[in-house]
Length: 309
Image (cartoon, rainbow, N blue to C red; front, side, top):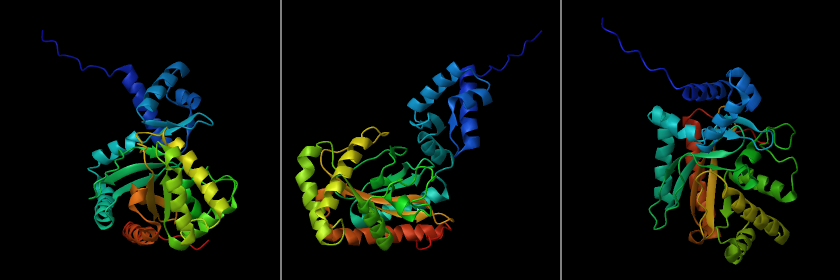
């Protein structure tokens, strides 16, 4: 008698992980706590916690530190892009980044806006300059006013309660000034102080003062001091994010939004360089280049500009 070999059964742990990811995909963008995940996947709470910790370590899930709920993570963006052959949308974004890098001489990046207000890198393109600032696809930046100003400025829910954490509950006069500036110009810019922040303060202060005198940054000394404090806090916060390199010297990023069909920020195009490579009087020209590229992608992808707020 010939005995046919039986197909090996999948490992229980692998099956359980697939169930968890399938559930989070089904419920996305809703965040689930571990107890609900365990119940719906028919797993023990102890096993669920072990699987979630493993997925968290690989950035396949994200955890909200406030209520310990979970959703799909940044690593799946790179996997999704690979499985889709990079797809038409990502290819359009990559083409735009290549053009931005060539036209500005800066490194170009694209970010996806996630339901929890974090932004995740989905594509990069190195500029032709001598300094390359590399960020891994799938790396993320924390929810922070310097990062999320585009979402904050254009959100129809700005200043309202119950907005999913996208907009700060308390608006400072300085933040309101920044929002007016973004709405007027259509792009934003932000500085990261670098690892050796204390040694870079004088350079950043000088840059901010010159930018303020040109009407690019905050005009008052008090506003600039508040901005410097935000820069320092952001620099510390980003050290804890996924695969995000913080340089010794200050860097400057200039970003513009790509809007979806509802007029909400869906993607961001960004160029980044060392702060010393961009003088304040040169920033508006670069900002316009980034904005035009983002506006064109909004049109091509069927999005719409938000109504004036």
